[in-house]
Image (cartoon, rainbow, N blue to C red; front, side, top):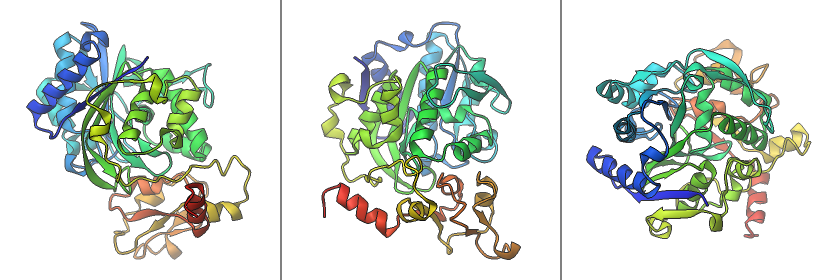
Length: 385
């Protein structure tokens, strides 16, 4: 039976975070259960974008530092790294406060710029990956995800954090190849099963709700959660916010493909009582995710049932990051008449609904809009009409 250590942590005060993580490790049998003296261990935080810690876009540096200190005390040889959605990893780490903590601890940045091709014959969706050298040259990985909402998969946490092991813009290739949320989730499960992190330390002291994973609102959950079962950990985090884990593609496919279990009776939560920590009004999409594309629906129907990205013109600064990041070929948004004085314009007949544009927008100027037919369908599914 997988263990999930759920421990209350009400601030990012370094001493409180350290004590909380020590308690959580003890509940799981101690850090020696996951790493050994002398092993080369990669710390994999979430460094989605260059954002300060208070924005809740990235793993908080206090969590990074405490985890690193505890593992270093065991004698592990540590490095850290991630590949962001856009921009340089070094700049993201600096802005997030991770690089500063790493320097204080004498930790080197792992090589996430160069990649090597690997094969995974047991994969269910994707058998070949190009992974960062820093991932492949480590003896073990400790994943440090941030709990946030996500446009395509509803939430991002332990399981999706491994997507940062794919270097640079190669991540966009997967969005183009696998636009369906379930196919994409199955690929993420394959990736996680291949790299096999030893442990997941979920930062949910402050999470992100609403328009995540980059431009949502910080929301305090007062939780640090640890487990070596990423599916059980994500499922437990979903229960904290009153979200049915079965509605999250990564969690459902994670169990189906053998990465863990989401079933409550099969998970032993130790530490705090989950009920006492629940935040049921957390702003997250609670409607069903349907595999519209795999159902063979026409573009006409898709445009009326699948949420689409929309630009909020008053927030748009015309930086062009959305245009550059769009993986569709030809691109689904472009400058109107090549005029960069106006916001880019979508061609929804080309849009694959991967929501990369919404994820990388530095100004929070792109939101997901549900068509009226989808809203009605969601209400019907919830039994409200």
